[in-house]
Length: 171
Length: 315
Image (cartoon, rainbow over all chains, first blue to last red; front, side):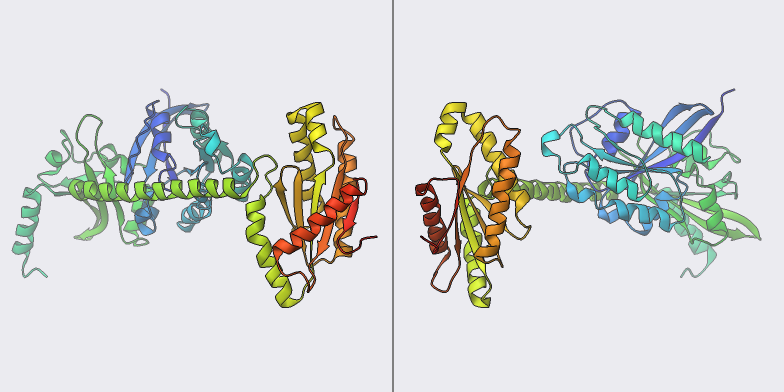
């Protein structure tokens, strides 16, 4: 019988950076241009195959709005094995939130693998964050980074699988 | 405060009957110990059994073992998860909030799980946040467009240097500052010798590349505090705050030498003529300073091009 382990991961980032679209692309394989603000949390599941057995990823898509920051969001983060922190490559201010999200994770005693994603890489003309900017931010936290597009699907699967790999390595 | 237990039970029963709230008692391993009469109907679930793990009922409780232990030990006062999207794909949206508290009865350690239906307030809040976020996005887009427009208005697209409009705005302020605090200020006007012939002979693409090269050389040669602009056509204007003519002349020489070196690998050769002027007490305005440098530039042309002329140092 194949062993299935369950791991909770969280998606964090400013509002409208594309967290819900990334989850939707990863879990359902599709994309919608319509922006709908997430409130609270939506939990989705997807099983990924790992060398050591299947891993059931419980993906917590957290609201990016300020209203859900602070203590409430701390409760959402508890029990996580990893996190994906997302910025929007067309909005420079979304990169500066990285520090805050990492601090929030560390504040509740979590030392978990992180991956930083610069989303909306398909919007080349509007890009205000470069790959070097993202790399520099990710290196601050000794974590990998990826440029992705929930719209085209580029690097979405890769980001989640990389996080699953890091979680597996950490054990 | 409730006056008696019967009243408290009555209130709880009313809450349960109205279907907005339900509860279950859990053991410390998160298995269901007991649940309210409306628990199953509230969750649209069937066959919830005593002893079943609450993690099979709520995805949100998976991986929460440590958090639950923290509640039991009093390390954290409660485990509260608000606005969990509890919808399955084919039904209208439904949001619940979960609260887990320590519950002690007859010395047995139990957890009280309260589930509240918060759909109506969640949808109101969702609409408000949606409108708020859409406004913020519009504001961000507007700022980006404004920044782009401002850049287009004040910068030259070919060389990416500030343009004459930018200079016209900035230079008078530097002139005023220098006059008030009696600090030196010098200005250089420069153009490419026979630029028209160069364009005619090699084409505008090559001419444009020549302009880009010259702009890059200027930027790499001057200090960060100097101000280089494309004045128009093949004319460039640079002003040097805190530099007198003698010192600015050093920078101008540096530009000329760097240009010669840069052009070694370029398709064509060209030279530049330069006029330099200093702000003196006699110079009344930015426009007058530019005029003096411009006159010096034309003198450099008249005297054979490919040279630097200083205003006020006529032979």
